[in-house]
Image 1 (spheres, one colour):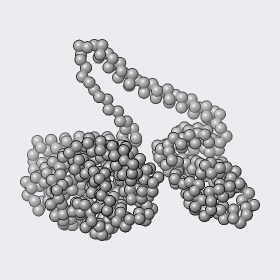
Image 2: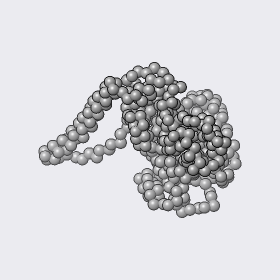
Image 3: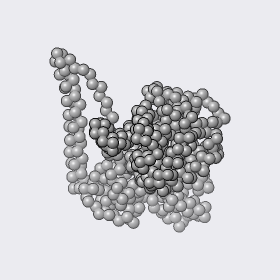
Length: 529
């Protein structure tokens, strides 16, 4: 029925995710009002407030909260690159400070954003992280809400994948937790209404119209007395859902009532500047007018629908391939009579266009020359990394091998076995691992671990981690070709590096070439795996 977007579902459940808690901090209240009161009427002010709180507040949890809301404001504008950027920044801060409550919700948010772009493999990576975080949330109330929120977002993921039965299973799980806390939630009616609407869209896709209608009507009964009723996206989706059921079954509502519901939904979508919802309603209005033989209105709304659809698809394609460059050039009116001014502007634009083109051509030529030279005179290590079999690659990294371990005493043997377990479980892929945390796992001191690694690996702790991480990324690039299309930042993340820059520097220092060059070289050599 409807191509429901992750945007709506994330929005609803984040919009009301401020709890009644013992600590009613003034800043927390202000952050809540940014979403409920300020965002709908003044988006610029909402951005300004969240930015100011992030910059000036000293409480790290409030900083994370402010970043999260800032990410949602970008999400609301369908600016996914910036929404992901802010959310990932918040995740880095939350992971560093072990703010598990916010981590669970941020992982869900990022997963939902990737689902929105139909990047399901990336989305599920973040959803899977949530299950590890939930048990670490100490406060029972926060833990129950976070579990509810997780299953709701997971239902959205399944909906986007068109697995409607699994979506309904996730909704059923979320309802169990919602029942436990609904009486304590701000705007609990909005939660319950949105939950029913979420259920209805899946029933509608399964063509279980009676169940869908029942859920829509139940959702409507929850939100009809809400102060946000007239501008709520939940209201809009319920309107168009009921109209679609009546239109498809030709019963329940008159033709005039169906049109009225569509137009009310369109008005709410316009108020919220929700382009995806507008696209959907344009489609339904074109169907409605075509069915009623009103070709003028059919043409009007069909054209609007196609324009919105084309714009969305173009945006998605650009974003998925990470070719989106945010360059907003403020154009000024050029006085034709002022030829000198006109010449300066034109010259500037020509340079602006030609310089990056020239730079790109120069860079590609340089890379090709480097590639030719590498083919003619490749380093011994590069040859081995490209050609050796999977079982021999670990031998190319000193930090992976254990040397003379049979000479270890009893205590050292115990530490070595625990370190081997750490290596087997790929604990080094956690970019927050430290000598202290590793020593804790080995049930000994940092000094003992350092000495054991130095004695039986012949390297220091930092190099020990580095070699395992480099081996991981080499294996991925050699034997799982899809990773060759990933951005360097993503490769850094999945192989345990803390940043794009540290990954590139360490890779080049050890391997002799940077990661992007290695990938190109690997493709050029056409190595079969």
